[in-house]
Amino acid sequence: MKKIIIWTLIVLTVLALTFVGAVIYEKMTSDDAHWDMQVRKPAVYLYPKSDSYISVKLDVNGRITEDIPPYNDGWNVFATSEGLIENKYDYLFYEASLNKIELPSNGWVVQYNNLEEWFDEYLIRLGLNEKEKTQFKEYWLAELPESNYYEIKLLEDSFLKENMNLIINPEPNTIIRLNFYFRPIQKQIELEEPIIKTQKREGFTIVEWGGILENKNQP
Image (tube, rainbow, N blue to C red; front, side, top):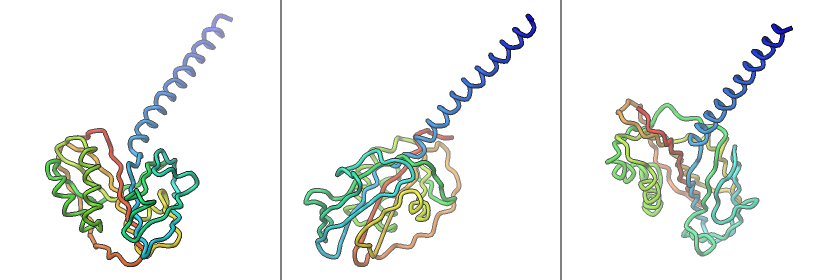
């Protein structure tokens, strides 16, 4: 009888330790996933051919965590051809926590001290205008913590369509979406750079920039 009680206690102890370990592991991995997949400040610019009302809806594989103006069930806004929204906003703002992340194999490695110069060159080549580039820099240069280098990758259009889709009515003629992945690193690594083709703006144009910051410094 005593042996049965002892073995029962041992089994219960093992099960309890296994459960506690699983809970701790789940918390650690969910915390890692959280910082890894928080999309910061996607800014959506609207440039209709003429002043008009525009409907913008977000199809996010995750949840929206911030929005300006209030998103509710979608943005229905008035925008001028110069891009002024509701007579006071330069862009629609949101942040989102995604359920998944897929990164391309190519990208850039940039020294921290050269980030501003890199943004000045590459954001224009990737399709932003001077105003959009300046607002991008104002946000991200203040957000990126100091590190020796940054690994920078551009999320692919197929991933954005699947996980951060923009549904816009009327349908735009040109869509430029630049959502980056930033990873601070201490040592330089080799990455194949993507081929850049500057997209020409024609007709009703949508521009978006944003990013994901991996906020753990890596070797």
